[in-house]
Length: 250
Image 1 (cartoon, rainbow, N blue to C red):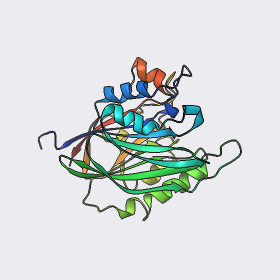
Image 2 (image 1 turned 90 degrees about the horizontal axis):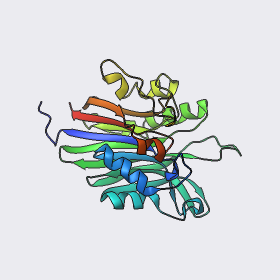
Image 3 (image 1 turned 30 degrees about the horizontal axis):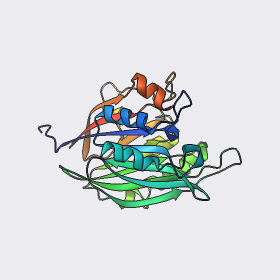
């Protein structure tokens, strides 16, 4: 199969840390610079603020998408009064919301953050692609519960086997964790699809040791390449590096 523009899809997952960089400075423009450098068609973002005082009441997803000239959908996983915090899907191509929900979460006074997932259909030149972006919790049992839900009939089970599917996000889990292994029963982890398979750590940017950010695909897609985008700007812009995959329709 030739690698025409319609068959190729370049995607990334990126935890932007509220656009607050390792220097303590908040900069949506710096995140835009990183995303522009990825040369991707679609990116799933985690940890975005909307109307939060700590971020100057900015709608970060809108600001980033507008500067890129892209389409976007935001879903709040966490609400505190009128302040929202959550995930977004940004795309060069038109997208349509399929589903967005909070995930069952285990919160504590030290970590009151609830988690969520957002599912959109991307209208690429090669046809529709289903993409789910999520950010899982910090607790082992919490992540397993959330992974089980995403793998079940409410999420992945609702997608036709004939459609290309991508699940991505900051899973707060290592590749061999129970949650990742559970998702890998339904999809394929992109790190395992390159030869030789690579660990590709994404966190923390000061000294990346942990592969916490993941992309999974079904058998309607194959992986051409997988990289972690490590530039000086990306090292400073967030505490996570973006994980990038070049995909081709199978």
